[in-house]
Image 1 (cartoon, rainbow, N blue to C red):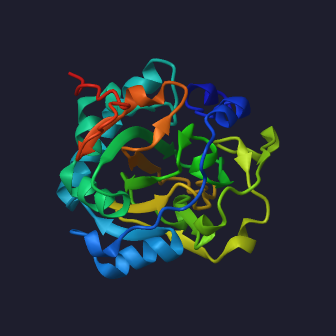
Image 2: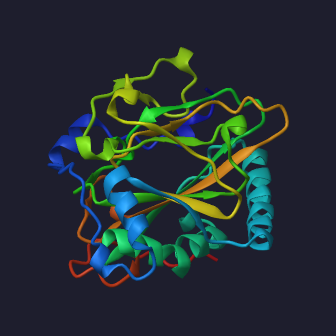
Length: 277
């Protein structure tokens, strides 16, 4: 598990408590949707996710993969690993451009409302034979945000399927609010450090297999995880893009990462960092 300190973003429990977090699902309003179909809005409200949505053509996906390959090469050369490229939109112009892509923001706005902030970007890259899993967890357990009115867009950089450790969802688990977890043990080889036991009791497992250039979008309270990549020759890389309604408040200085990508932020809570050079 060497190098994991480079990318863990787990706030201290006391800091989460002082934020007075509201952990409840905010359904999307199908009547206000402009891009997503009524069936996709219904899927999000009932199941907690939508998939797949094609954002980039095969040629565009190949270009993004080449861009990531260069980032990964530089990261490893500087002592990082395949999970170390975090908060990438504040360092790399190409990631900023993906995070603010209107085609992605249009979908997210249908789920989060008229005022949207993009605040996170993190590559999760499982190399061939990586051997590490992502245990069942909720994103909201890691994030010092309140209320829990946020989504993750998971962009496939490589084709992702069960063979190379694609993501899996527990459909409908977002309706249970915050779910109790335990700290993972080193023997579990978990990429993160939280594990929800008996996650299957909260709903049906859905495999989130995606082609490069496609995305899935899931609610921050949805239970999800992935098995190890045991493929001997296939990588599995995804770029996680994080968004919330602009009314959400962030602790631990996370508001410094937030870009207003749709509508406005009347309270001026989010700092709107510029596009990096």
